[in-house]
Image 1: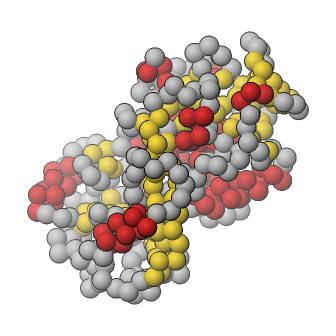
Image 2: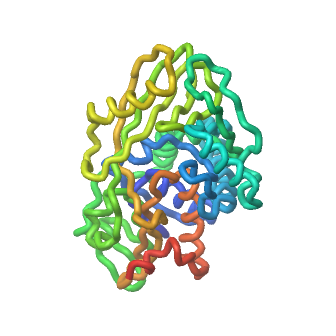
Length: 346
């Protein structure tokens, strides 16, 4: 088989880059062994504001423009609903937080995202005496539906090989990448946390951050917004809600833990008082970076080898944007932003 690109990994990063290739009529094949689950356990929120500090997300306008266009195209391609527009309400824990919010909402770069009106709590089963601040231009991408259906699309078109990628089987020269019986111009590694086992990019400063997420059934809750407090509460359908997420820098397994469950439920119980039942519990390891920027770029020695990783907790927003940047760098020679280029760590 001869293609333009070999892609390793089919989470949010891999899908985003595949879409760049399809858009430009490039041929490719994807290798994936389902070992990495960070995209599967993602809450899927896109939100232009850092809600802990009331500051703007890096290049949020550019990220949203590229991402929402891509997800709209994917809904047509796959015939499924992916993008759910939904407001985000930030619960205020103190009057100081209220003041900080309204000061931030006056800033020109943030005014289009932060409401200047206090949202009062109208739900008896929610504890929020100081009300909420509303964030605009937010929503949720159904990442499970996206990944499941994108894999089906790839399989249907004979573009997905579900097997462990064997780095020892790579043969490189200046013009092509040979992997077993597949020959390509370029190879892009989008493996998530699995990149730590990649001998070509294992030196990258990736920080594994395990996250765990619960799904609860709460028929009396009846909220149609994302509530962000000590945990986030994301409404799904049929009175189901995602509750998350935890951050663990020591455990790098995909196993769920009772400690995380108890931590999430303890925080949830300070926010809501209605009855609920936990119906699902999942875990995965996020590929994060200390400077909170992705790891994108070209191998120092092997010029037809690239990495697309480190999307962290905002993968649905930043993945499409950095994938476009990487494609334009490879095919058009456009320089990448220094803040995402792996050269910043050389």
